[in-house]
Length: 108
Image 1 (cartoon, rainbow, N blue to C red):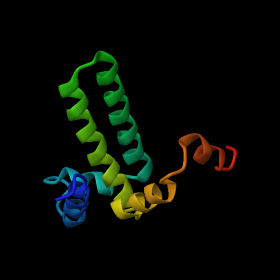
Image 2 (cartoon, rainbow, N blue to C red; image 1 turned 90 degrees about the vertical axis):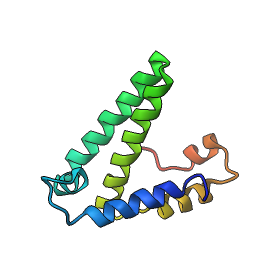
Image 3 (cartoon, helix red, strand yellow; image 1 turned 120 degrees about the vertical axis):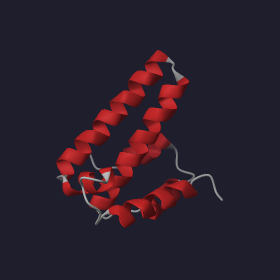
Image 4 (cartoon, rainbow, N blue to C red; image 1 turned 135 degrees about the vertical axis):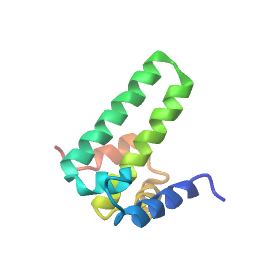
């Protein structure tokens, strides 16, 4: 098993729970919410990772990172994005410096 196969496993679990009762499944509950609400949850989890990192608490960094990835995968599913899509994007960037890649993006 590759180190990132767990993302595919988690994504498949999210798909499987999509039709579950939102009263019994956190995934189903999150998928019933608006994309904006799920995105807010992803942001909250990201902040919690950052706080844990600034405090240097490894166990909390790990736990909050798991929460962040979980909710990010829910957001991806809502938006029709798969871990394979992200892998393709990383492959596209492979061998390109981060500075060069960022400069190639349209100005915001």
